Length: 118
Length: 145
Image (tube, rainbow over all chains, first blue to last red):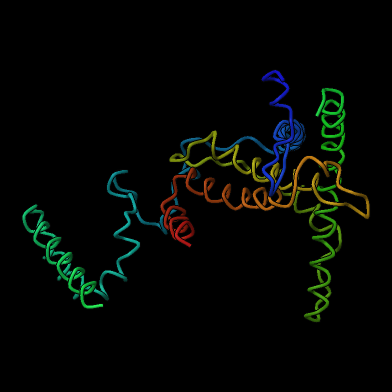
């Protein structure tokens, strides 16, 4: 069987089947129709006016870097309410490798003790 | 599958896609009208006329297609179409009015489930591509869910 023919085959995995080529052909046709229909709409707008400015409830927009919403902004409530545990965890993460090795040895020794006792 | 049957399937896909798109768009809006009328009657209201969704589409066509200055315009314009195309392509794998699906031997339920995810993904990507900070906040929360 040539490579072209194997591409045309319906893919069967035992638990499901689909034919990507037939699907691609159909979505291309649907896309064309939908695109033509969309073309009937109004394409114009006023470029570089108040219309295209981002909506920030009337607040001015600062530089793009400053306006980026970070993960810490989203998790603010979460980190604020669990501040006590995050403070302890931050102190434990010293960035010193010997500290991490020490923690590793402590955890391993506890594990060995637990396994030995059971 | 030999070349003849694949050509046959492709022909069904082409003709079926045209038919199903027209059917889906018209009946989708018509059912929306029935839905709005029915829920209005349930709440003791008269409700909008059945053709209201069609009138809404005509009105929306007259609105300006604003692309925000922070937006990635090609993604912003393309993604809504992708969402609609994926939704319409599901109709090819579903039985319509008692007839068996047009592509009944070309795809299964798992494919339908995957295609159903595309519109919501498209909404998230479209929101991100608008470059709006409000959208970013909203969709980051959505991704987490």
